[in-house]
Image (cartoon, rainbow, N blue to C red; front, side):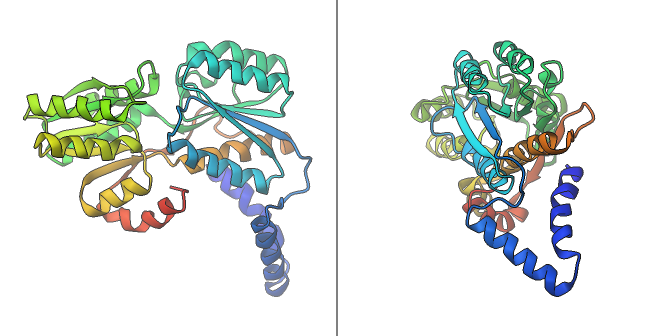
Amino acid sequence: MGAVLVAVLGVTAGLTGCSSTGGKRAEDARKAATAQGKAAVNTPRWTFGMVTHSGDGDTFWDIVQSGAKQAARKDNINFLYAHDDEAQQQAQLVDSYIDKKVDGIIVTLAKPDAMKGALARAKKAGIPVITVNSGSAESKDFGALTHIGQDETIAGEAVGEELNKRGKKKALCILHEQGNVGHEQRCDGAKKTFDGKIQNLYVTGTNMPDVQSSIEARLQTDKSVDAVVTLGAPFADTAVKAADSAGSKAEVDTFDLNEKVAAGLKSGDLGFAVDQQPYLQGYQAVDLLWLYKYNADVLGGGRPVLTGPQIITKDQAAELEEYAKRGTR
């Protein structure tokens, strides 16, 4: 990640290095151009397509897109976005971008087996691919330049360690998308480090009333559960409601951060959040594809570029809340 910052800062340094007055004018001009949606570079207007496994209404991906679009404006990129939570449909969307002869593809590998063929076709067509968010273990083997995201097992291990610090003894890990290997890795990672007991609870993530009723029913039948871990920010508030309805004092913790989660941490409704910085995932993916097209740069050295995990508690919530409100955290 440091190399990306150096590359980005290098643009600023080139603008500001001449003199304090001239540099300030150049920087002001750059900011004005960016604010007007103008590019900060003079490279060709390449087209990059992003395809994710997002379902409809998942606000996490709004944050990823926000970062990607910001980088696209800066880098003079025509940015396309498509999504489908069905793996075969996701692969077909990748194929559609290949047919359009895009200049680069960004893709998630939540269900990697179904995506392997699509990435092979992209490679055969000479289209560089970067994977984000899901699929760090498969990314290199599938021919991607690099992977940007968090190691899901390490993130899960961080959750187990945090639960230990909080003295928890029994937790529910709420999986809202069956077949998502990253979700399984999170819960498995937590089991590795948690001194207590963790039980997986599968729910239908596209049906929030079902999510709430499933969590509520489990908490009503097992009063020994003292922690509920959701795997996505939109489900945290639902878990809080479920705990209240069940009369449970279980602490609700979650993966990912958004405005509601930041407010919940600040108020104490939530214990902690595991932030993987989705804005950074989108921003870096576009920026790294641009760097590859412009300068054949590749980050990671064959290993994932990690954007998380970062444990966020009440202490950091107030600072991050303003960023969450603007849709960048």
